[in-house]
Length: 195
Image (tube, rainbow, N blue to C red; front, side, top):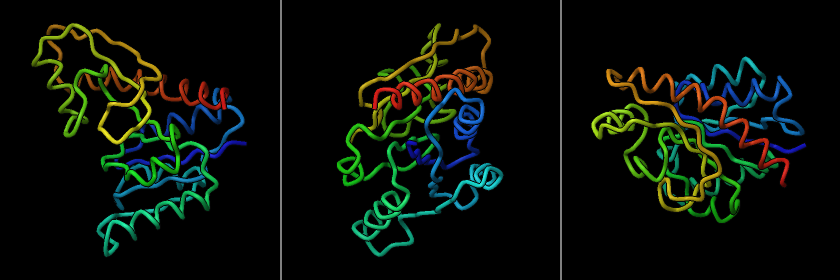
């Protein structure tokens, strides 16, 4: 049984898609060992509680320095016997020490077709605004391995959606999110099958 730890900062709809996929049996031989969030008001916390998933609020601001923060985070992940870390709307940079501890073991879902519209500051609505501003006809989502550079890691899977002529960022976001909810569990299952 593999242990997945999900990192989320917001409402947690991608987190929920993983929970649902485990319940439905589309993700097999795995369980969610914990949720890590930097936001004590994240909607993802309620989703975790509803599914009896342990929650840890770990914020950099709570520690005197980066070393203590990273040590605490790594100790927590080791205690959960973490096999795979999934960033599902997590808005903080992952420390290098964690990436070294889990090489190719941290993945992220991004709401655009990388390498387009990735990098520092490109998240949420901003991504969809950029797609529309560029008059692109296609957008989508990407699951990739997390590396030291924002959104630069190897791509593990993508899904596309059409950008409609009268799309608003909100409408485009809704359609992309639907694809995210399908793509993320699929990629997780592929990773677990290979490992």
